[in-house]
Length: 189
Image (cartoon, rainbow, N blue to C red):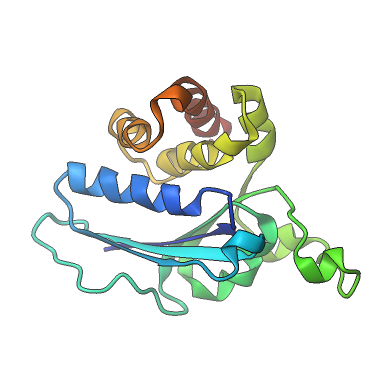
């Protein structure tokens, strides 16, 4: 089974990303379970979703919850959120994160400092998702950039994954999300 923890800040599209992963899994005959933890999402707070996908069409998943040390992948749409949930990563797991920094309220209020050199602690694959999303036409497509990078890193079927993404978004945003997905796919080696 593949266990994915998606982390971000409210409004970044973590919930949409989990739905895309679920659609991809179900469209390809695999069992999938999702769980969303919203927290203070409406105020720019932390949002995580758990996604579990079977590797075998006969394998059933009974719970979407991922315990600490149980995630094969952490897919983070913001750097600090990747660090916040790093303890959930399984030994040998993959961290894929956006270089974007969104200041949490204690930092904005001057009570704390945004951690420096997070990249050293993450030891993962960093994607400049915001710049690529802007290149695609809209900052809100950064989640599609990250899904493209995820697709490439996980060696998933690009056409089927892209189709799952495009089926989950509003029709008027298809072209910019398609571009964002491509940019994300091409940015990782």
